[in-house]
Amino acid sequence: MDKGRYINRKTFLRLATFSAGAAFVVLWQIMTGKSKQLSEQAVVNRINIAKLGTGIFWYDKYIVVKSASLLKVFSNRCTHAGCRINKEIDGKLVCPCHGSRYDSLTGKVLQGPAGLPLSTIPFNTDTKTGEIIIKI
Image 1 (tube, rainbow, N blue to C red):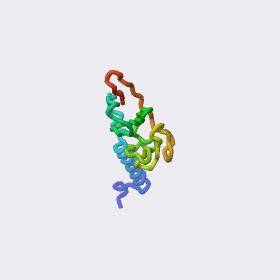
Image 2: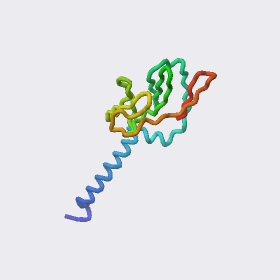
Image 3: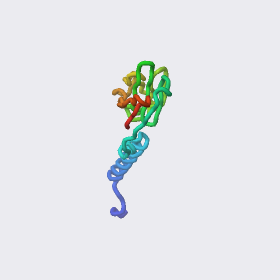
Image 4: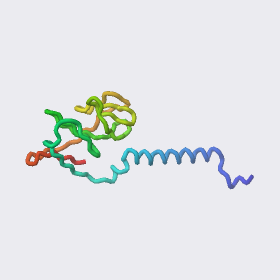
């Protein structure tokens, strides 16, 4: 057997492990949208509050929660693994990936594995138009 044409088992395993790790990182960034976040510029969104009513409203990058006396805007990314939160059960915001649950009024973690509350997104109110202005 010609030793110059083959790699040893240790080298093969190192290359395979490195390749699998790199593929995982790329796929994870695609799944969680982190690669897009690095290249996008801030986007201004205007939402007419009077037309919303009350409840939980889902948008591409954030969640708007409106009650009679409260208006909050949260990131829709779970603080555990960055998955997009896209459903509500009994007034709780639920991550579909690992089941973390957040209070819809405060963003606090009610059930893990997430350990941090949802990020609050600041907004301004345009009193002339009745719109909130969100920059993300």
